[in-house]
Image 1 (cartoon, rainbow, N blue to C red):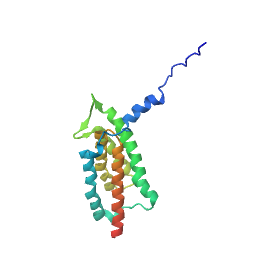
Image 2 (cartoon, rainbow, N blue to C red):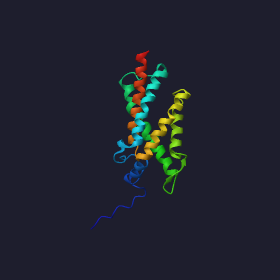
Image 3 (cartoon, rainbow, N blue to C red):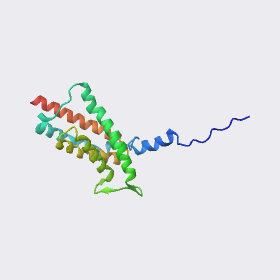
Image 4 (cartoon, rainbow, N blue to C red):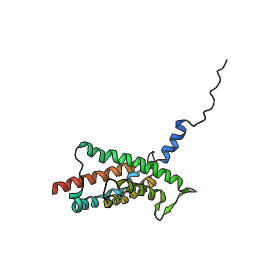
Length: 179
């Protein structure tokens, strides 16, 4: 005698919804050779003069990380969380909602999803930073959003965000040494 088969599940299995969600959130491998991408390299090199200018112009007003946990948070935790949530989930969802016939809606050179995510990123910095500092994160946010869309993954953005934060921390730390 054979046992009756289990009734079909009313809801999809976790695997059925997890893979599309992960794909939409950019949690996949970036395109092959992403580190050789011209936009990626430009985004890395463009940060150097910004860090130097920050250290020389506003360095004494910058807060340098103090202690290992502060550095770990600045260089690992914050980039990972912010990129996974903002460029991954938020921008991924916004891309899905603002794409028509396979083409993302754009505001000039920017996707609507990138512009909305950047607005949220700036807004999230407002409670913790003065307005000029909060607005200053807009350009790096747009770059990170562009790379997320261009390379098809959040992981290059996580790395770039970590590099940006490391440079910012080193600029603040170096400026303290000079004063």
